Amino acid sequence: MNYETVVGLEVHVELSTKSKIFCGCTTEFGGEPNTHVCPVCTGMPGSLPVMNKGVVEFAIRAGLALNCEITRYNKFDRKNYFYPDLPKAYQVSQLYLPICQNGKVEIEVDGVKKYIGIHEIHMEEDAGKLIHDPWDDCTLVDYNRCGVPLLEIVSEADFRSADEVIAYLTKLRDIMMYLGVSDCKMQEGSMRADVNVSVRPVGQKEFGTRSEMKNMNSFKAIYRAINFESKRQIEILEDGGKVVQETRRWDENKDASFAMRSKENAQDYRYFPEPDLLPIEISDSWIEDVKSNLPELPEAKRARYISEFGLSEYDAGVITSAKQLAYLFEDTTAICGKPKEVCNLVMGELMRLLSETSTLPEDINVEPKKVADLINLISDGKINRNVGKEVFEEIFRNDVEPVKYVEEKGLLMLNDDSLVSDTIDKVIADNPKSIEDFKGGKEKAFGFLVGQTMKALKGKANPKSVNEILKEKLSKL
Image 1: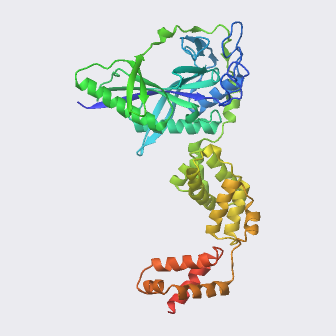
Image 2: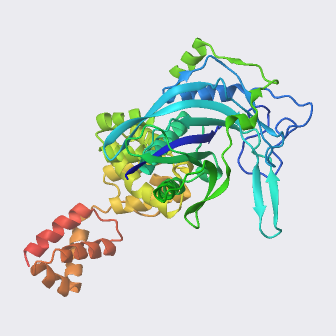
Image 3: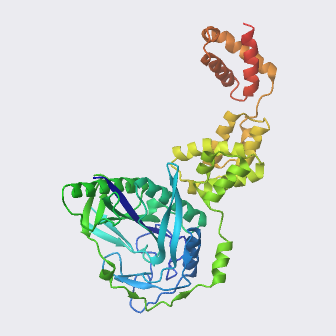
């Protein structure tokens, strides 16, 4: 029997507000354990929450970008459960009237486009973090994360492969980062997903029994977990067994999932309206104000770069894959007016340095003005491209001023043809074997001679002049 995989996602996105959802504590990542806390976020008796308006605005912003309907009248509910990282023994969330509903996101996999439905987006508070100490054989709890605002983005069960899931998560992450509502640093838990997986015979309308893997924070792990879980469930059904609804833990080291507990239903959490918070009423004018201030999103920016700057679809896709890359490209182009040269620098040297230094795009600290000055130095023939690469690396690593650096290091390009000619004569005299190879039709020999000439001139010669003069001299041999 042929089976198809069905996946639904609940994506948790930590918001980039400066303070928590119901108190004034900082949301900054890190800090000594239990120092970013107060009576409100630790649930002390008598403390009362106050709604952070910025959280509501971020939620509206995300809902509009994901084509959702904004719920004009929405409220909070208590989700009751006991766990050591939840000091109040309940979580303030939204069950009955979430702030956003009925959205959709278009994805593309292998040239095929489809829409993924967004069932709802609701606001809620985050829990703390448990830290398991293997040395002392104990578990510690850090409440710094308690009360950090979250958006939970709940998809419909519209995914049919792990590839579709990754395409969706990538697009969702890009949109959230462009909106400025979250930094989406998965390694810090700013974006994580609960993955619901089931299988069913092809053609069957009813969903199969699902399992859930919670708090997954890497695309690689999510991709592998979906494929493993799908295969596991198919094997159970093929052997005549029955899939059990449960929460499972993904073990990255063992490349397998393991049962944790039976899956709870909504009634197990004993939801009831949050008594300490008033309902939220969102006016049409507020929504229109948020809509008018939405930034250009990746898809629109990508199309504009192709039409306005003549970038290829691939280059535009890479540059818009991170907000900081796009802003660096756009701001630099605005200064120097040379989009193709800026694109080549970003796609080449910048991507290489990001990889070599394990730097994330969001941590780029390069001034567009300095990059524009460097590109102008190359375009004006004051330095060659090899020197340009050296200077860009110094800008990236040490934040140097390119014009000043080139002058101090004596890197300005030599335009003395007589010096170039004399140097080539010496290179020809010193490399008779390469001359014979060139005469024998070996093109690599020409490149070697160019390299030796550039080396002798300390990389400061004009490569065009070197090539022309060398060709002329070799033709006369």
